[in-house]
Amino acid sequence: MRLIFLGPPGAGKGTQAKLLTERYGIPQLSTGDMLRAAVAQATEVGKRAKAVMDAGQLVSDEIVNEIVSDRVDAPDCAKGFILDGYPRTVPQAIALDRMLETKGLKLDAVIELKVDEAALVRRMENRVAETVAAGGTVRSDDNPEAFRRRLTEYREKTAPLSDHYARIGQLKTVDGMAGVEAVTAEIEKILA
Ligand code: AMP
Image 1 (cartoon, helix red, strand yellow):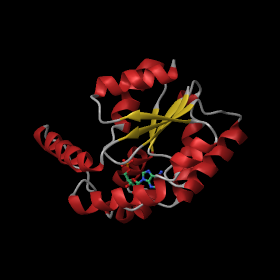
Image 2: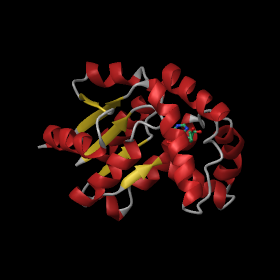
Image 3: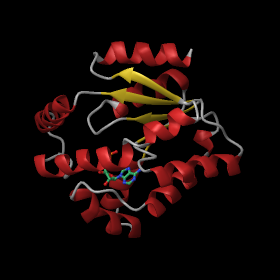
């Protein structure tokens, strides 16, 4: 099973991807998590990405295309994977199409979580409050200014991907405003 989750920051992509990893026994490939790990380890990629991520902007296509291509080759991806936060631009989607073709792999579905933008800021604030209450570290881009920028980046660069995948008949849209379990049930119906 090879899936892509599309949707703005706070739409619930990470939550749903995590639930599906258990159901299908395939890993969640979050480019945001991979980049945050690179920043934490101060690798060359991490050093290049940090300021861009903190500002809520997108890291270059070249960097993310390469980390995803390498990650997909790992043995735990043999049965499939769930892409969360990638692709995020039309050139990334085109690079992914080519990468999968070269590797002889096909996508099963692209699932878009549709959400009301006003709810997204509230979700981000709740995520920050829950992280603080649990004694965790708040993401450096989970603040109002960077979050607004992330939403703008989404609208300008990522939202056009829906058309890209609709044109090739792979787009499935789910109401992301429903509760977590209802959204999971909708996704499972699509994948059945
Ligand atoms: P996320 O955890 O998916 O919200 O991503 C956090 C940040 O990592 C984004 O705001 C970008 O700066 C960067 N990032 C994650 N995935 C990508 C991607 N596919 N393309 C470019 N930048 C990305």
